[in-house]
Amino acid sequence: MNLLHQALSRRLLLSLAAAFCAVGAQAQSALDDVLKAKVLKVAVQTDSAPYGYVGTDLKPIGLDIDMANYIAKKMGVAVELVPVVSASRIPALLTKKADLVIATLGKNAEREKVIDFTAAYSPFFQAVFGPKAATVKSFADLAGKSVGVTRGAMEDQELGKVAPPTVDTKRFEDNNATIAAFVSGQVQFVALGASVAGNMLVKNPQLASEYKLLLKDSPNFIGVAKGEDKLKAKVNEILAGAKKAGDLDAMAQKWLGRPAGDLPL
Image (cartoon, rainbow, N blue to C red; front, side):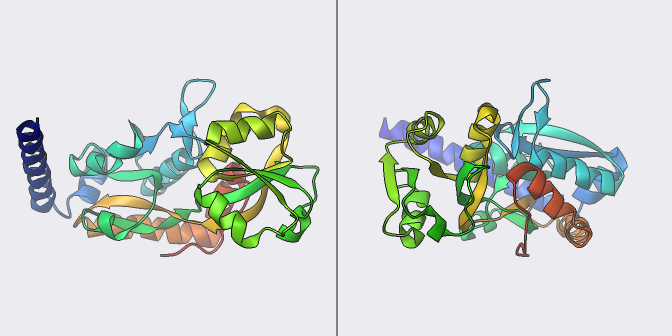
């Protein structure tokens, strides 16, 4: 079995190396190719509400889909959405199945070795959510209230740093259990990541719940193939215009219940 694993690993490395060579050989051609074909291929997720998911008409909707359409419109081309899952986002760029990845992609040193990133386009965050009718403007307002959280998750750690001592923090073993506790009224508030909370709000509109307090912000960036500086510059130009016009704030407000704010470059 070890020999088989080693052989598969070597094949994977060779495949990736070939992909890198292809990207290098065609560097700087992506923007010209998009404008010539009049189609921008964008990798998006359809299982990550409210960023990207399937609507009642079975078509992808969400903040990331709005962003893909926005960029394509500004470029004067049509958009072709390429559905991906988390693990296939970067390979979609390397194999040229997509020109851009707009799919809740965070930037880190490991990923920067493989692909390039534009400026940030939207926030991705951990936050406290609760009923719209509840007035909560600071963590002090949670005093004496119950908050559900998934044990050991980032939200659990961040909530522990800011919650008043009198907050009744109820920990559950996974996100499903945490959400179930909130939906059933076992807890008054819930601390979740944006995509998990988005799914909860989409599936449970009867809750009349909303974003309340920020725990931690981790912005999303758009992925671009290595060396495609012209395409990256064009997208950054569009994002800068969208930020100045207030369009990034409007998209975030629409889908996340809060403006985009001061996103990093």
